[in-house]
Image (cartoon, rainbow, N blue to C red):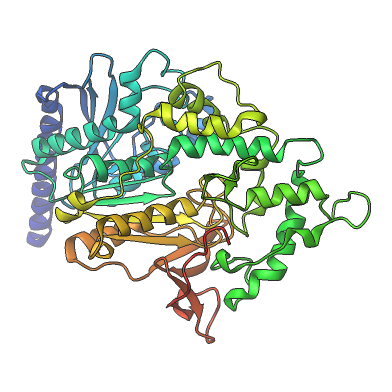
Length: 519
């Protein structure tokens, strides 16, 4: 009986302490509305109980259950909403999430791709679940479109780079106020347009983050956007030159038949597609057009998609990066009936600042160069000398899917090489690039695409251990059915000849000739 009394008393005391701690957390959270920050106001602060976060959504009520799934297991956290106004036309919405307990002492800012325009709640949820204090921004406008740009040059600056800097400043200030100390380590993690924001942060604001994970970064954005439109017009120059989507599987099967075994394993994935020497002319129709062959104009279009994009008149290279073998099933992204909507929107509203501009086949080369010139470098993110970032101990972990049909994989290879050249000796101790065989834009495809980039970057920053390999998984129907090591550029995963070809333990990262640009 005495033991039971002691146990009850202990539980009661624990409950009282827990309630007191909760009350203290609520008070600390709510008091953040009084936080004073330069050109930034805290608009709301509240505690969110475990599993109760419901993201704002415009979707129908029937979709809300699926929309909430990533948030149902989140621990309790303090949600802080802020608005930054670094210019007289800025309105950058920011959210900071602070775990009520078990904070790991780290800050992870996350970024959204495309045209952004919303707080990236799902990415923040992943960070919070791992114990990070996290933050995200809408990049200074609402809606995943470029309609905000005409007449608002300051908002373009916010979208281009300033919003991520404001995110870093606000996140660190809120963390210090809530926990009583700043984060020991600050990181940024994003893909695509968000990856470009990561590169920009390293270039413009080397103090903001100590570690940056940048996936499929769309740097050189103006040239990339204009060239993607030019590529689309070129492969659709006549009805006969367009490759119908129904032929993509046939082309892909032919490529895999020739190149799948180049890496020693027949698995539907090209470990190093730069080694694949596939001649699309072998698919030339020997008679009338049919589903199992390509017409001569279609062969030309296939070569356009998989080669550096050039001015057909002068031969000048307009875009070095191009699609690689293995991406054929996704050729519709650049080669479909219409150009990418985001590229059209950015070229018109951001780069050329002319919403009525119309790209024409006869003027491709001039329009690409005009877009680059008129953009003025805002969305270029093409500073390669990252010495200030590296000198502060900063580490940059880049990654890219080899089968990316939207931002060609070579885009990251080119940036990586240029940084090594610009920084010189020792640069390879601060930057790494991992290529993902068979992976599409920011994920998807037949290759393993799920990996812990944050574990790799934090171990590098905090313990000085540059990642030599990163294990990635492929998840099918909710289950892991393949793991493979991702290897740093210049190395590929080689099968040891023993064990399952679906197990990372059966592979070793080994040196191989670097990518052969342009093949």
